Amino acid sequence: MEAYLRIVRWKNLLFILVIQWLMQHAVVYPLLQTYGFEISQRDVFNILLYAATMLISAGGYVINDYFDVKIDRLNRPDKVIVSEKITPKAAMLYYQMLTVTGVICGLILAFLSHSFTLGFIMLFTPGLLWFYSASYKRQFITGNVIVSFSASLVMLVVGFLEVALLQIQYGNLLLQTPIPAQIYGWTGGFAAFAFACTWIREIIKDMEDIHGDREMECRTMPIKWGIPKTKYFLYALIILTIAALFHVDFHYIHFDGNLTTRYILFGLTLPLVALSYLIFRSKTPEDFHQASTLSKFIMLAGVLYSLIFYYLTAKTFHISIFGLFIVK
Image 1 (cartoon, rainbow, N blue to C red):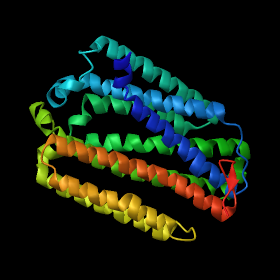
Image 2 (spheres, helix red, strand yellow):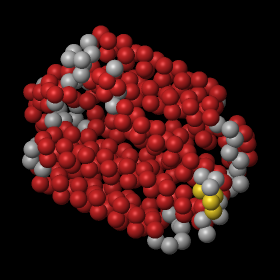
Image 3 (cartoon, rainbow, N blue to C red):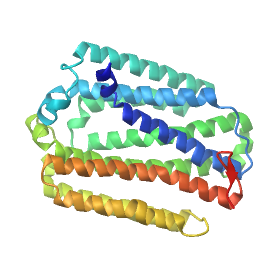
Image 4 (cartoon, one colour):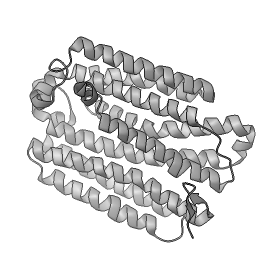
């Protein structure tokens, strides 16, 4: 039983659940409250969303391990699950059960919410994850971008669902408000940060796994460019991410005070600078693993800005936080 939990990265699945819950309750719902929109009962829709996302993600983790047995024997021999604790046949059956159930939940959600976009995403993503694991993962840049895009979809689907439900409830009246643009803008902003952090982390993991990947004739960035040039690319990506954060803060976030600026500076920029230093001094797989771990915490810090957003929105528009109290 433990092996079946480990192979689906249950901690990552919980993280996905927390992300989607925060996108709904700390970003989208406060936005709706500021414009006086009523938040209808959505338990069924939310359960279907969480189930579809986590099941499809879990299936993606399983099929990744299924195709990566040989590479994992070289890079992480102590963490091999498929063929060691779960047979390849059982792993494939497990993948099929998770993915099919996830797609069914996703299609039911798309049908109930009248959203073609959600339906397309729920069908497209499993195929993307399959081809990533089978082929694209070993190709230059392509694999990293696919994983990063998949991470961003976790947040984007929340925006697509909420706008679809609002259109059912309010019809064309919704299009006369800035709500759809606000929802897409904020969930898209969090998704963009998730994309950047995931891309950074995937490249770091490629540097960590360079020896095994080279044995298997993969064409990852560190193998094609070498470690030094790959590090320079990461520095550039980190600088662009920091610049984008401050650009968004100065041009698109208009709350009173400088809490957002301070959060970006101390909660995101300084950790990104620290990450750059870790990458600079990294030479061994253990060093790169430390940098990879830090990048996960930076992504978590980015997600937790949703609570700062909720607080600032509640303070500005005098709405209650989680229905408990009003900030003055």
